[in-house]
Image (cartoon, rainbow over all chains, first blue to last red; front, top):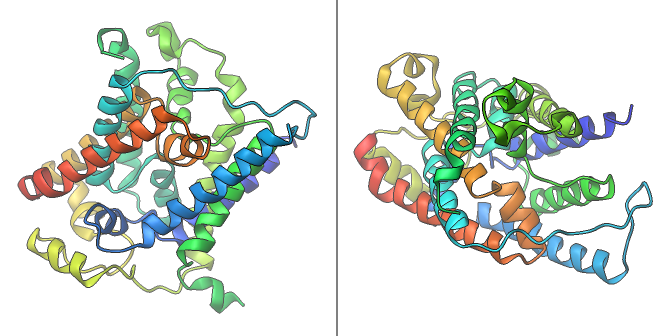
Length: 137
Length: 185
């Protein structure tokens, strides 16, 4: 039953994505058009609390439930992969109105067409894995 | 009480809950990064036999797949038990701009013009959804993360790569919204 807690957290995540309307194509359009504070408020609150919490974990060397120290690994230093990869992601985000998490929330909500988006996101990831050595990183 | 939570949740409640989910995952010895599941699924489906990138111990990521199943369940619960049935309350300016692109005002959470079954079975409708999915899947792995991994987890740790990735998300998003979408729709 070690996995039950992740099922509960995932369920909470799905409910929050739906009830905050962050899973809506309309909300993503509104965000990219800078016509409402809503999405910026959600992400801004999460990041502000996140920065405070991560700083506290580091300051007090907090440990996880198993007693292991909580470590944050710096991501590889690069510009190209984050900028190009991020831009391609953004193109898809604004077109389909969903990043990977909200895609599956939509499927559960009853938007069956989102299954196609999710399946092709898997295809996109496979495609990246197949040609990654030829891409600038 | 039920009536209260059936309304859309305000931004700060939602943001605080997302942050809480991230910290609970951290305290359970994991991290918040949803798009990693796409790589895990490729590996679990046997992709490692053909592509080295998918040749890893995907079973160590089962916790995240369970989180994914929870997210589907959460969407189901929200739609069947926690919804007041009202369409999303987006800005009048957005409604006006989208109507110029042929997208009518919200009647639910998603536009029928893109996500109805009828639209899915047209060539254009199918290609839009497929292309959107491919770019999200390709781009998130290329950038090493999506909104949860970079915009939430990475920025919380003040990581420069995540800031660059989020700037990329917006370059792509703005390009799609203002340049490409009017051509596509």
